[in-house]
Image (cartoon, rainbow, N blue to C red; front, side):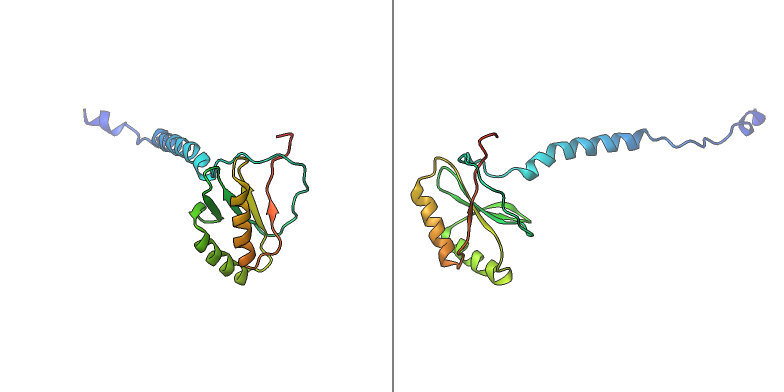
Length: 140
């Protein structure tokens, strides 16, 4: 009986099944969370043909949804709800750091014209003299 135990060789293979299970769980988690990270405020953009802006830096996008709420795109946080006073302060601080920052307004087609004019007035108070309006091309 002692000779039977000594003939057994140690198992020299690695069991990779648990690693595959962990990898599949991580894959499912990333597949679920990836679309949530890029999701922003849903806005129906007006259609127009326009040229794209050549920019070296990421533009700041100010979104106005159909309820008239304002959202500011921040690189680390995505779209953040903001009021006019806080928006003015943030834009003034941003222009002190990077004076050549491109500002884009992204407004829903159902937003009253007055809301867009209000936000353009706030941008003018912050010292922004050039801004762009985002549209959707007719082919999209």
